[in-house]
Image (cartoon, rainbow, N blue to C red; front, side, top):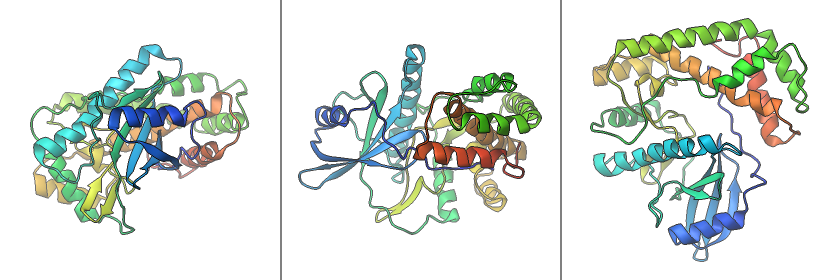
Length: 326
C-alpha cells in the first residue's frame, strides 16, 4: 500500500516570488498581479497566477537540487522529456484529457528560475467536486497506453530512486541521528523494521531483473493516475501532473487500481499484466516513500506543516500493518 500524502504546504524560502513573476512575464507573456502559493501535491510547489483581467494560470515549480550541479542537468532533462510526452500525447494522438504545459517563448519546458528551480505553466482548470469514476479512469489509461510511435519520455530503468538514502540510513542505525526533532523517532522506526526493509530491497532487485528478462512490450505511463491527478472539469475528465511520465510496463499505472479493474484492462487490451509486475510497482512506491522521507528527518530541520505530514506518513508506513509490501 502506498501512503499518498499532500506535502508542500509551505512555500520555499529561497525562491523569490518576484523572480517567478518575471519569468511568467518574459516567457509566457503573463503579467501576474497576484501569485498565490497553492498547498497541494508532493515534490513540487504550485502557485495560482492571476493577471489584471482576472485570467489565471497554474504554475508548477520543481526543485532541481541545491548544490548538486552534477545532477541538476540530468533532473532537468528527465523532467523536460516527461512534460514533452504530455504534449506528444495531446497533439499527436489527440488525447484531449491530457493537460500539457503551455509553451514558453524560449521553447524550453520547463523554464529555469535561477539555478535551482524549474517552472512550468499550465492552463487553469475549474475542477468540480465529483470524482472521476474507476471506469472512466481505466478508459483514459487504455487510450494512453495505446499510443504508438516514439514518445519523448525516458524508459524506466527500474532503479529505486535515491536508494543510497536507505542504504546509508540503515548503515547508521546504531548511532543517534541529530538533525532535528524527528531524527531519533525516524531512526527508531526504521530500526524496528530493518530486516523487513532489507528483505524488501532484495525482492525489489530480483523482480526488476525478472521484468527486464521477460522483455514484454512497454507503454507510455503517467506514473501517478490517482484521484488528485484525475479531475473532472466542465470539459470532461482530465489527467494532470505529467512530471512522472515514463515508458514502462502497464503495471506502473495499474498497480493503484483494484484487481477487478486490472482484469477489465486485460480484457479490453489483450495485454498481459503479470501480478508480479503489479507487486513490483507497489513495492517500489513504499520503498520510494522511505528513500524520500529519510533524508528529510536526518538533515537539520525544525517542525513545520510539511514535516508533520511527512512524519505521519512515514511512521504509518513503517508501523505494523502499515504496508502490504514490506
